[in-house]
Image (cartoon, rainbow, N blue to C red; front, side, top):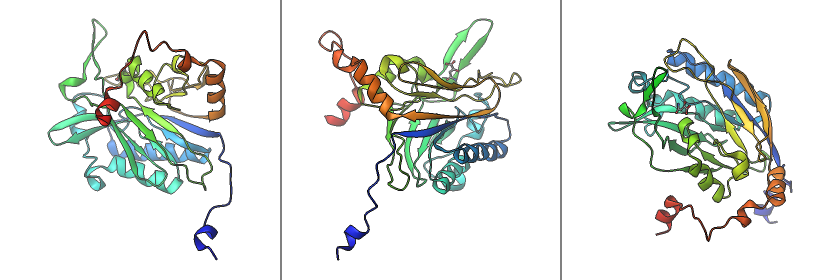
Length: 290
Ligand SMILES: NC(=O)CC(=O)C(=O)O
């Protein structure tokens, strides 16, 4: 008897759909509470069927230059040095879900980054995206925020290929990661789209024929930086599939790959692009191929 063959899973056709959960979290100065609170929200999203769960930017700490060094964690060391990522890894493994862990302040040597960790359904750290475009802005009379006072910019776009376990019966596809201000730089979404991406947490859904999921902290008017809320899932025609208001909330919505394929067939933008007239250079790919 061919034992290896007998261990093969029964033939199953993976579903083209899966549910995503966007956890619009309230964030406080109490880090332990923030971690427990995020865990509860992830569990709730998974209980509602989400196979991919997303958190907002800086969910374990107030969003301020004073807080980043105090709340920062050494992700590479892990364990007690990084209670936030330890929680994400554990809950991803226990619930068999993929987590795009918003972002937390990361300490690496003498540098700090604004970093998103992605965990697969075995709880393994699949990718770490360090915010590429730092939020250095000055709107007179309204807001000045200079992230580069404390943070260092990341150097790479991040694309994650998630698992496709036969027992899960749905993969959550190829994900491109962007953190907040990264969303404003369309070249990043274009690079992600050019790499055949399914689901970036970035903008420009219709232009690049992608699903786009954005996840914000809940609005807190007493905070130093007041987030907008309104976490949203947008489909490949630019259609808003699910959204919310300012308050804490969990959005559960469906992603369907077959729709993505259909849209790309209906409007074959990739084939019609006039690469002979203009070109977007993927520096990361060029580096890795040279
Ligand atoms: N926090 C950010 O990075 C940016 C932001 O809030 C915005 O682009 O607006």
